[in-house]
Image 1 (cartoon, rainbow, N blue to C red):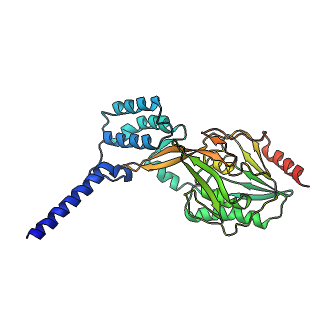
Image 2 (tube, one colour):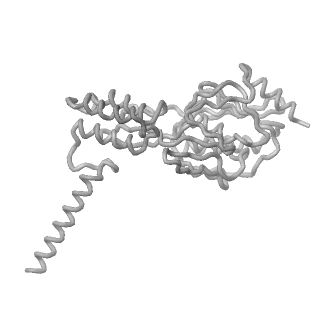
Image 3 (cartoon, helix red, strand yellow):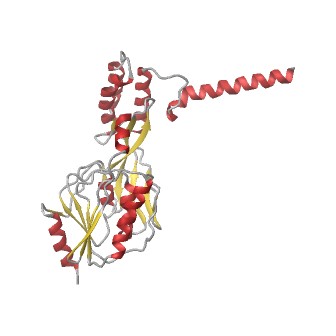
Length: 318
């Protein structure tokens, strides 16, 4: 009887400890004992912003947190809090940060897959790199199409056209272009505490997260001149793909300044299925230039990027 009582008390203690852990830390994993009130929903969102956001050491953020709590104190549901949280996340993480509703996430998941293009003009291979949102199968198709285009065609130079590429999943873009990129560190994420996380390419694989895919042939193409085209609609992962080419000797950037979303977002799920897309890191390229949501400026400013790139490539052929 005494042994049974001890076991029962032990189980009660373990359960109490488990429930206490969920109560205190469950929000980190989106686990709750009961549905959170709108006010707790706000506090959880603000706490995540506080921990991850790049600009939460500022006086403006301290004031914004207080104001957001006050403005949502009478909210009757989660939806009523979102406009105030949208304002707050811009202060915590900057212009690249936002809240995405569950219905928007669903719409994005069925966005039409746009395949990259490859064409030969003269002796130049022109690769059009669209933004990518899709599943793992589509990511593999995207990456391997680019990789095979680089290996099966005869050409003297390559144009990597990132104009209009607003981002999405970085991995298939970079892996598809990996024959043009040296293995090693492509660029580095730097958080607000100056902690660094290099994004590396090795043997046809990239450690950036995102889609799980690999290209079939990672043989390097080392001597071809490469023109990277950007414009004001090249943003986010489109810009990071462009930055992978910074510091490579045979590369020239042409076009106009990019959109200036050169940073990394971290996804945090909220109770109702919405997500915080909170900017948690800036970007440092292989030449040690740091981009804090700064645009990438081309080497050659031009409104005729494609024709200028073809002429530049011709000038590099000896």
